[in-house]
Structures are given as C-alpha cells and as structure tokens.
Amino acid sequence: MQATCRHLLSLNDLTAEEARALLARGTELKAMHRRGEDYRPLRYRTLAMIFEKSSTRTRVSFEAGMVQLGGHALFLSARDTQLGRGEPVEDAARVLSRMVDAVMIRTFEQTTVERFAAYSQVPVINGLTNRLHPCQVLADLQTYFEHRGDIRGRRVAWIGDGNNMCQTYLEAARLFDFELRVGCPAGFEPDADLLAAAGERCTVLHDPLAAAAGADLIATDVWASMHQEGEHAARAALFAPYQVSEALMACAAPDALFMHCLPAHRGEEVAAAVIDGPQSVVWDEAENRLHVQKALLEFLLVPGP
Ligand code: CP
Ligand code: NVA
Image (cartoon, rainbow, N blue to C red; front, side):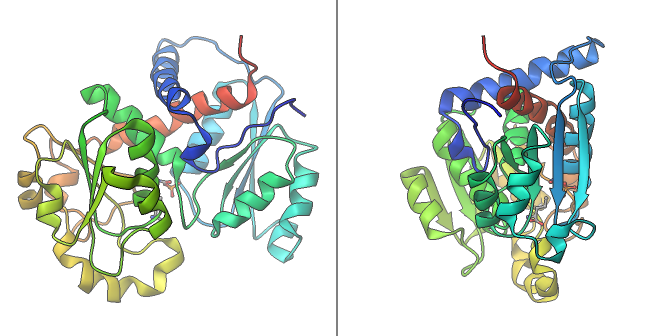
C-alpha cells in the first residue's frame, strides 16, 4: 500500500501542471519505446483491468503498456468474476487492492469507480464510464500537442452527442485552458454540472456549422454509446445533420485537426473522406493511448524523485 494513493477517476484528479507533465512524459516514453530503450520501473507490479463493457484500445493499450514497463496486466471480465454475480464493489476493492498494485475499471456508473476507489488501497483508473473517459482525452491532447503545440487559447469543437467524451473535454477545457464549442442536438447536451464547472470556456450551440467555425480541432464520437445501443436507430435520424462532413471541416480553421476516439462509423458521425483524409490524426490518437497511459501508470506507481 502506498503512503498517498492517487486515483484518476476524472481529469479533475490532476492539477494543470501534472496534466501537462503527463502529456510531455507520454511523448518522451513514446520516443524511448521507438528507440528500443529498456525501461521497466514496474517489474513485479500488477494492474487488474475490470471490464463491464467491450474494449479494443483500452484493453490492449493498458496490457501492452504494463508489459513494456516490466509489469503484468490481468483482464477481468464482469462475466467471469464474482462482480458479475453481485459481489459488492466495496468488497472487490478491498480484496483486489491487497493483491495488485493498481486497478483500471471500465463500467457504467461513475459512482461505481468512486465507490471502488473509496475502498481501494491502490490507485484506481477510470477506463470509461457513462459520464467520463479521461484516458482517451489525455491521449487526444498528447496528439494535439505533438501535431500543433500547446492547446492553450485554441478553439475545440465537439460535434455530436454530449456524451462521456464531450464531458471529459469540458473538464479538459478548464485544465488546459482552451475554448470548447459543443455542437449537439437539443436534448443531447452534456450534464449541467459539468457545463457549469467549465464556465465561460464552453458554449453549447445547436448549429453544427456554427460550432465548427474557426476551430483548431474538430472531435466527434459515436451517436449511441455502449450503454445506449437500443437507441441507435432513433438517434441516427436526429443526429444526421451533425455528421462531420467535408463541408463541416471547411468551416474550421484551414489547418484544423480531426479526432475520433474510435470505434468509428463511417457515413454516420463522420464521413469516410474526413476520417481517412489528410486532417485526420485518429491513428496517432489511438496509438497515444499506449504512451500517455504508460506515463499515467508511472505517475501513479513510481515514487517521484
Ligand atoms: N477509444 C476507446 O476507448 O476504445 P475501446 O472501446 O476499443 O477501448
Ligand atoms: N462514447 C463511447 C466511447 C467509446 C470509446 C461509448 O461510451 O461507447
């Protein structure tokens, strides 16, 4: 057990300085990895990864990241553990955190990761809830910094659903000091408390082209998230005007980047010509999950100088 146990349940668990340092460290670890440097500060350390929803990127990036840092990751599906049979989260937290060095959780309610962390002796990382997806937005911002430099004072347009990704961008706008314009259909705005916390940095518009105007970064995500699969058809009709098309990209700054956390649906939230086009940095964005999460694991598990 560590003397002071930090968690990453939301970006608000980081100071602005820590958040910026994480992105820089992610870029540094990426270069070290490419040079083939042997850097294994997490030898004999274990990360438990609890998945109550599907994943490709989150699972593989955390697992590969732990191996690269000299440790080990355990994949725990709710289907095969006692969590899926109703064992209380508080009990699972007390047991697992006596056995492993950190826990990553992908689940439904934000309160589940909060309850787990309250009873955990080791750091807990939010690997996506219905409310937030902090690891993905850290990877997005590392990608922005690598392509365009500091995001402070820049304009980001979030187009589509006011979902977990959009809500994490709201937290990021405050932490990294950028302007966020959300272009979403009426009734699909982000949660009011997160909007209020972002203050004047964030504006909600229901006209997607107005939201995209002059933006340095255009980001979007699926129209129906994993906990909303039954709503897919109804949402598709409502969200059609919010597709990130070439016409929408033309409203943004000429050197605007396009990001999508993936998985994507070409022809729905994004046109194939955009996601596969020259302004898209989605593959760098996906790769940076690996690097920024290695920086995060190091930050949470390796004592500072
Ligand atoms: N972007 C993201 O979190 O992808 P996965 O659902 O594949 O983990
Ligand atoms: N908003 C999406 C993100 C997937 C990575 C979801 O929650 O399903």
